[in-house]
Length: 138
Image (tube, rainbow, N blue to C red; front, side, top):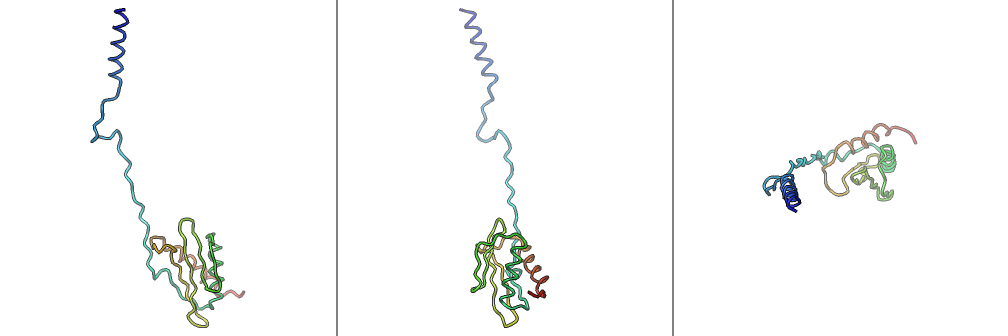
């Protein structure tokens, strides 16, 4: 019986020694990974507007072709009002075609949410596509 009690006491003492020490609330068990906020570039409104020497209809179709070329997902389009809503994977954009004169129209590509923290490459790519193909005959 005495031997069982001694074994039990030794077991309890060893168990207590193997348990981790009590950690105070001030000292974390591990260092947390710092949260780095990803800085998105802020696009200026002037980078989202461009005037082209094209009719409204041709600019509309070229804008539609550009969104298709870059695999943007078209959510909604309205040819009479002259707008296209497309998504780039993480953000929706509104492309508005505005009448300026008979042979001149303006394309405005703005974020659907109104938040201009996005890469200016999105409107630049569409504008460059239109500039490349604006002289093509259809």
